[in-house]
Length: 183
Image 1 (tube, rainbow, N blue to C red):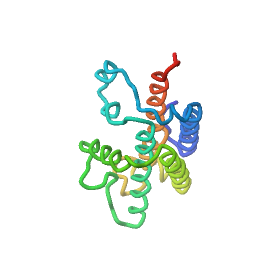
Image 2: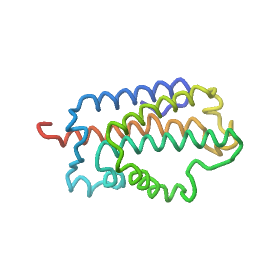
Image 3: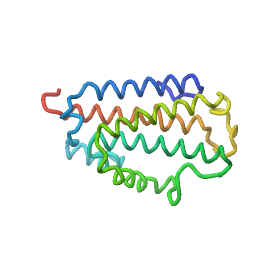
C-alpha cells in the first residue's frame, strides 16, 4: 500500500492496518501475548533501528503506538487553541526523540498488556475522530494549517497510524516467528 495522500486513503489505510494489527494479536495465546521477545542475537546485531533493542514485549509496542497517538492528539488540541506548540514536546526534537521513546517505555513498566491494548484501542478511536474532523485540504494541502509548517497534518496522521501500525505488524510477525512450534 502506498502512503496515503487523501483523507479517504488515510482513513481506509489506518483502519485496515489497525485491523491487521488486531488480527495478529487475536491469533496468539495469552502466554504468547505476555511473552518477552526472543529475537536472535545475530538478528538484533544487524538491526540499525533502536526499537529492536528497546521494546521487550508486545506491551511495549502497544504503549509506543498509544503514546504517539497522544502526541498527535495533544499537538492538534493545543494548536487549535492557539498555543503554537511543536509536535514533539520540549526538550525533544527529531534528533533526540529516541530518548522520549525510552521515557514512554519506562513510564509504562507497570502497565499490563491488556491495559495497553485498551489504551491503544481507545486512542485509535480518538485519532480516527480527529482525522474525520478535518477536511481533505486541511489534512493534505501544504501550509493549510500554519502550525504544521512545511509538513501536512495528514502526513503526521499517516505517521502515527498506518505507517506506525505497519511497523508494529512487522515486529509482531517477527515475535510470532520466534515462538515455540512456529515455522
